[in-house]
Image 1 (cartoon, rainbow, N blue to C red):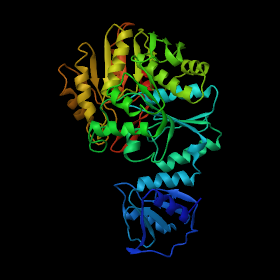
Image 2: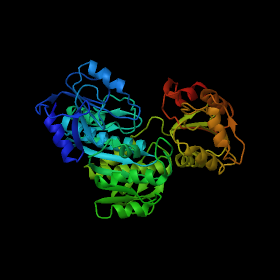
Image 3: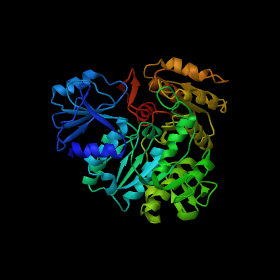
Length: 482
């Protein structure tokens, strides 16, 4: 629960309180001891004891009127909707939500060790490595794009990479109630852009890499804006882990020069000395031999990043070795074998940089004919289409099938044709994803051949017209046609 007086004190301390208005006039007669037993930004989940937050460009006054009909008595907003109940007016609704949620849920962030991961790619893989490492001696919870667990037993599909602030602190409180000691979470650039983690400080923040992505009308307007919001994690972490091989490394290194940090990658002491498909040797703070189930140097570097972070959070070298050896990630580098011996690789790679690394890893192991199945999302991340087209020009011997990948309100064929417009070589368009997979598998002949299915990973839906339509999943469909 939270008192109205406490709400106002939090807002004033954050310089975010304007006034309380009631039907356009200033309101002075509220009871400071007014108590709220629930907070919500969903107008369908309110009652008399709820403090409601009005957020979102698509919010309609009718939502507020429906909430009032169920007993709502106060709301927080950036303007007065003049609907007959007092409005607590703030400058920034997202800041207000985050700080009030912290207080409402008893500041659960102070009862957990917090590890945050950011980067254009690799966040989920690194989160799974960290979860497996910390599991050896602690009781971690995890919020990831792929799965979330707040008790170490039950896993559920995440809606957002980083949850909305009210949901985030509710989840943290549940993790504390479940006896969890650590929380691993992916922190997207959007989380800072729309202030889902406002006021939160992480014990360790990891910056894996950066490349252009999430640039478009409803996301970041430019790479500069995307990179800036990624870097905000460094300002809100007590210690930082950085990849020496990332683009613009010197800029980020300079940013963290005066705070505790560790650097990994090829230009550091914490580097991979000898890399094989399923094991590697590391130097520096993690010196030793490591077995690993996920092939590819980039996965090994994600493991090192997670290991260094967990070292700062209390894990031993033995924990790190055991955790890395037992980590697997749904939809990340899952490998099937066809009856003719050809390999099928299913991976979540969904931007130019990660798809390029995926292709390179597969071609290093498979020397026969390789077929790539790839699509681009609709109504977001439009820059990926050009990135994919230019990338695929580098692989003239790769047979490319362009298909649907969450086309949303766009035509998947039009998206594929846009990718094709940047290509200097032929490709095939098969809009239906299952048909594309079946076709690709039918094209292999020998054990050296490969099919690469990129993009959806373990997702069991296609987003079409703003709706998640059930989809069996790339791995399940590939198994049908082995």
